[in-house]
Amino acid sequence: MARQNNNNRRPQSENAFEKVLEIRRVSKKTKGGNNISFTSLVITGDGKGNVGLGQGRAPSVADGIKKAIRLANRNQVKVPVVNGTIPFRAQVKFKAATVLLKPAPRGTGIIAGGAVRTVVEAAGITDIVSKILGSNNKTTNAKATFKALKEIEILDKKYKLLNKKSK
Image (cartoon, rainbow, N blue to C red; front, side):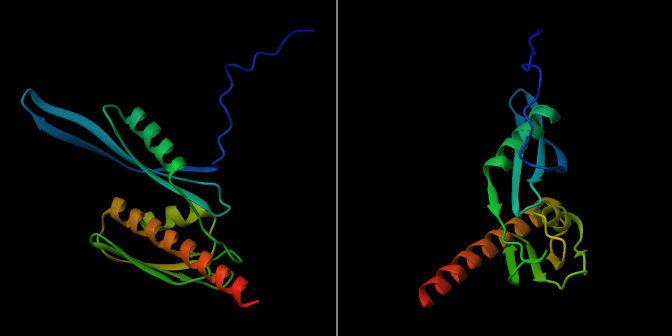
């Protein structure tokens, strides 16, 4: 019987959703000239409430994306998803961007634009209403959305703890 070689197989990723949101070419002035590198913003998620955001910077695009994916998998939030939506309203300001996330009834869909839509889809939320105020920058809007989801996670933990104490 022939032995099967599994060394060439890539391990299955635990994240069902990996999306490169933005790639930017950045340069740094040095004594010897310009050092060019690439910054990439990646969103990962499993569609069941876990979502991660990572920003990687490297001399090549591929290395920057790999670094961002690794950071996104390390920096994850467990968002409580109740009937396809979030349980609480959240309004968060991050730098110049303000993001408003509101729960929506079943069947509404994702009413969100740009970076907010991508982050929310990665988390597995199917019904939500959102509004971006202030900045048009994808990176800032994605980070503001991620911060809002972190806030919702903390509020949910507090709510569950209070309910447990009152019983």
